[in-house]
Image: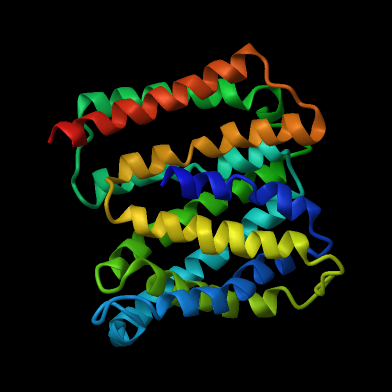
Length: 276
């Protein structure tokens, strides 16, 4: 989960580098990843591969793909309308939506250490965000789009976990990615569609979708929702490092303290599961 989140952390940076429209970069991320994922999916064990999906599995894949297409569409639009810090943080509000889903739908009440982990994570996020995360009229539209992306992504994670009960990780991801590419295709038709530089969109497809999402889809079936959500918080930490490397945005003591709090929250959230 941590390795997959680390791969996804470079997504906003690559979207900015791409020489196509935001919706087109979302489409290429999915479409270019489909052949790789289908080849990898063929290595799944018998009874857990593509052929085991059935009608119900295909329906779940279509729903997961629609959720992920919605996530990418509004997130990519938001990335170019707000700061990279806001885009990374607000799109990962699934950190708090997943435990809410677990509480309301699954009836899983967080333990006292888990409540503490959420509080520590919230403090860490506040420090990590720093000045660039302050909501403003200029970035309000982008911020709202990134928040909407978090809702779509939560839907995707919930449905893909149900699909994982039928299929191995890579077949599930391959079908959901194909479905999302089909949903995004008509949305991406307008504007700058064909890249002149294929590097950024290929990096999005391989790094974010094949490797990043592949690791996350594998891990989500083995971890409780709270730990899954908290794991996404490594992305703002990595985003700060990318900003320092690419744009000279050196993190100060508050940002470094925030990163430490995020790590502490992940440890606190994981301890009860280890004891059990």
